Length: 134
Image (cartoon, rainbow, N blue to C red):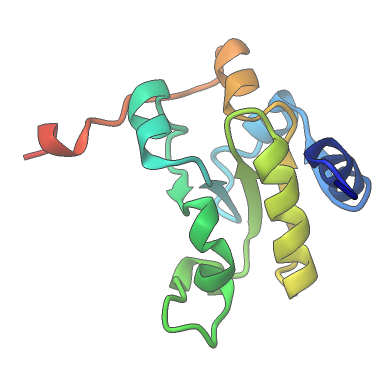
């Protein structure tokens, strides 16, 4: 293997903005900031969610941010700062680097991801399972 995930995450982290949980939490109510949760839907249901975060699964992120894609999501066309997070901060570091390389400006991620967010007692809510929402 030429590069393992740790090297990829380290390389991405050297080129992106990383916020501590406290720094990110201070931006939670800022109308010019959008939190982006890239975890799998099962993780959201099992662990909880950050209030106001937009769910954009990691597997679709390149398609959802590109305005030329048929899957483009208008939220990514807004002039906001986008703060990405996953469970531990690895996927979000790679995602933040990818979207930055694609041209999305004003992006960052949360060090330690949702696990650190939750451990710090930052605001969170439960997400009902799909079959419970009806």
